[in-house]
Image (cartoon, rainbow over all chains, first blue to last red; front, side, top):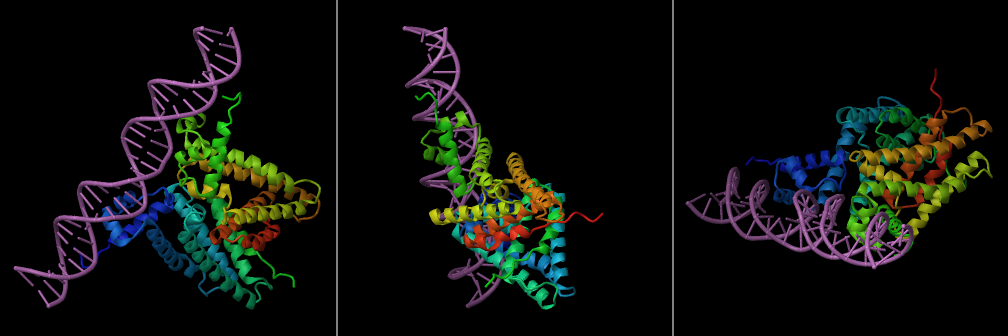
Length: 201
Length: 201
DNA sequence: ATCTTAGTTGACCAGTCAGTCAAGTCAAGC
DNA sequence: GCTTGACTTGACTGACTGGTCAACTAAGAT
């Protein structure tokens, strides 16, 4: 037995791959264990339940998304709007690559789970909402800078961030339903023009 | 035995309600039958498989959406843009009502299924894509009129229709993940400002 | 050497899954 | 009355579900 076991990590990775490629309900514990090369009892040693595993997946997925895509997109070497452009490019590239490798547009892990589980599992719904909140916050921070730098006129920053996130999720979903990554390249740049104005008072 | 059996209809209605409230995978044939008041053998008399049932659900759902919402929204008594506004209002109202009745924002039946099944069931993916295509087509027809009547400047009509649909789906998904119908009222009107320009040539 | 603890296993549990099928019922048509 | 076809049932199939648990293993500490 190794000094540090990597079993938990193997389970998490296997589950992430399988669930992302298919869906939460379609992937069972037995399959995850087979993929990770462990037995079920080990699974339950590390994760009290399937739901707990999924919460851990969401955290790990967000952490990876942040280091692999968001931090790159939002690096301050370019203007705020250029960062949003870069976010779009990286997203298009990511989904396109996955399509090239697997034959399917997998969609967004968070959006997929939200659509599938929100009405049935309050813990998972809340967790996804939390992740969505973080994503929107990152967008809002960039928009705030864009406004301060005069790249963007006066807008409701929080609402615009939410709207951009919604648009991103929607475009990814349509691309997934058509299994055509070309949809992303065609529609996602439109995200840059989304503006929600402050309410008239 | 009645001259005309309503069993098929009862099965379809029961399945629609259950799957819309939860998810495709979370609702089993046994439960659908119990809800419809029939036995499993009857189910398989009318539907060869769960997937076939779901295709029928998509058709019935679209037909109802068309008569209950789309036809009203797109009635020609107002200008094209006003029709889009009406579509937004009706959508907000519909999801808000369902939230009031059930405590959850159920999202879009088509989007939910796309997210859950697209990578696993090619038949269902295709069917949803087809329905999305019809929805986009309706939007495109209205946009074409808006352009013709000078309400909207020159745009890529098909792309703008797709973008609007994507935005609608995304907003509904965010509202579902937050279980807050207020998101719809706040963000959905932004759909009116979405424009995808013709590619520069 | 013994104890402790983290990790692992295999067998089990009760329930559920989509689908199958022989047999039965009923109403309409001849 | 008999036949037919639409519809319905109850029991079944083999597989699978998330989760449980007693027993075991191995490494580190004492």
